[in-house]
Length: 293
Image (tube, rainbow, N blue to C red):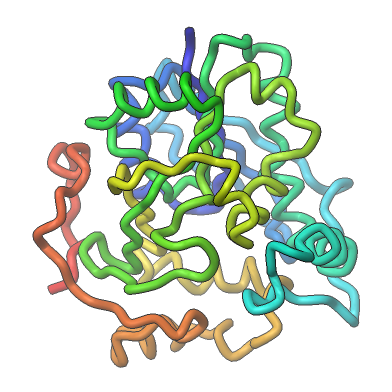
């Protein structure tokens, strides 16, 4: 049995370092894919820090010049209020047909199937995640046992924003940032009639809560927007084709969130918590500047 994890990459090297360190003791291969286009179809360089490569980390450069779509004048936008379980399929395909940013995001996320379909065996395990969704390695044995029993599981994740210890009191969609990351058996992976992005968006719409098992305990962290002072605005620009509210595409947006202790696009409150059982990898690396003072 081998354990594979796949995630897309934009420009999040500190988060990548945390995930690589946390995975080292139990994940056999971490596949990281970076595109030469933003989701808004603007040109970008390859930013992954090659010094982070190990025998277990497989880095893939994706040439998306002929695959990503350019934004058009009229687009549909992602509205958490309309992403409902009872009409998910109609909502999802309408969004991908009419929003270039979400189509491009889905294309990069779904690339895992082209990379892994010829190497994953039925008795292997596949983790489908985003880079900043990091599984706590101390739960590895429990997770492996549960996925072997259920074939597909998701996890509750602590959700921090901008700093390791600054947490959001809510997220859109399924609670506790669950039903975004999935751990599945190779047999399930090789039998899926749909791609990774479909699974993720359907989970956020709370349309999989009866079908996919989620353990009650928190077993990881979603550490979002770390190193925001240098990374936030380029990332916001990269997503501008996805967003209807262009006010959030500004260098001041993060500062406004921190000043008000609110994540405005979710209407969520931010709070400091230094008592959580943080990932063990955090203790092994330089995290200066990553803690809310």
